[in-house]
Image (cartoon, rainbow, N blue to C red; front, side, top):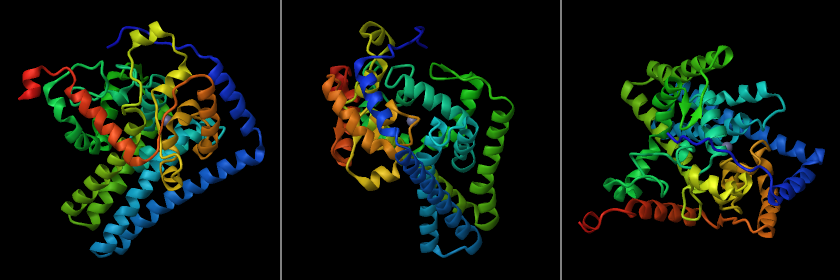
Amino acid sequence: MPAQKLSFETGGDFIVETRREVDEYLKSRRIRAWGRAQLYAKAFVSFALVAVSWSMLMFAQPGVLLGLLCLAGVMLGAILIGFCVQHDANHGAYFRSRRFNHLVGWTSDALLGFSSYAWRVKHNVAHHTYTNVDGYDDDINQTPFARLMPSQPQRSWYRLQHIYIWALYSMMVIRWQTGADIAALAKGRIGNTKMRAPKRWDLAGMIAGKIIFVTWAIVIPLLVYPWWVVAIGYVSFAMITSLVTATTFQLAHCVEEAHFTTAEELGASKTPWAVHEVETTVDFCPRNAVLTWMLGGLNYQIEHHLFPRVPHTHYPRIAEIVRRNAEKHGVRYTAQPSLWAALRSHQRHLRSLGRLGVPAEIEMG
Ligand SMILES: [Zn+2]
C-alpha cells in the first residue's frame, strides 16, 4: 500500500480558462433545461426497456427467438442504466439535491446488483481523483492477473494478457456484485482510498438493493424457467454487460496514448490536477452520435473527468472548449478517430506491457 498522501495542485491557466468558458456556455437556462430533459428521457427509455423486456420474459414466456430478443432488451436497458443513469446520478449530475441523486444512483444496487455506496468511493474518489496513478486508481489495478501500467511488477503469464484479459473483463460485474462489494466492506477501503462503513440509509439501501436484485434476476426467473435456463440467462447477462462496461472504461485510460504515473513521480512533477486528468484520459469516436448516446458520453471521457457533475448530454459541446484550450496551453489532448483505432491501441498497450521486462529466455521460449 502506498504510504504517501497524494495531493494535486488545483489551479492552472488551462482549467481556469476552460471552466470560465464552460460556465459561460451553461449560463443559458434553455441549454441547461435541454441537457436535463435529454438526460431524463434517456432514463425513461432505459427503465422502460428493462421493465418491458423482463415482463415479457416472465409473464408471456415467449419462444426461443423472442426470448433471446427480450434478454437482449434487458441487457441493453441495463447497460444504458449503467452508463446513462446511475453513473451521472452517482456523480451528482441528475438533480441539485444530493438525496435525489443518491436515490437515482441506487438503481445500480437494485437493477445492476452492485453497491452505489461502494461505487462512489471506487469511481468518484479513487478513479476520478487519482486517474492512472499506481496503487490509488483501483480501475487500473488487476495484479496479479494483468499488468496495466508500467510501474507494476512483471510476471511471465502477462505475455498472454492481451488474449485472456477479455475473459477477465467479462467477469467484472459478477465480481462487483459479490466479492468486490464484500471485500470493500470488510477492508474498509478500495485501493488506497478509505471507505467508511455504511450506516442507516446507506446500509439499508445496500441490503435492500441486493435483495431486490437477487429477487428479479434470479428468484422470480427460477419460478418460471428451469434452473439451467436461468443460469445461462444470468451468466450471459452479467458477462455481456461486463464486457461492454470494462471495454468502455479501458479504452479511455488503458491505451498507448494515455499517461500512467506513480505517487512519487506526481509529487516531483507538480502537475496540476486538470492537466493530469487530460493526459491520463483519451476520448474516442467523438463524431459517432449513436455511440455517444449509448455510452452516456463516456467516449468523451476527458470532458467527463473535468466536469463529472455536468450532465453528459453537454459533453460534445464542452469538448470543443476543452480541445481549444488544451491546444492553447500545451496540454496533450487525444481523441481516437474510431472504435477500431481505440481497440487496437488498447490491445497494443496490453501486448507491450505483457512483454516488457520479461527475461530473454522466457521471451524467446
Ligand atoms: Zn465517472
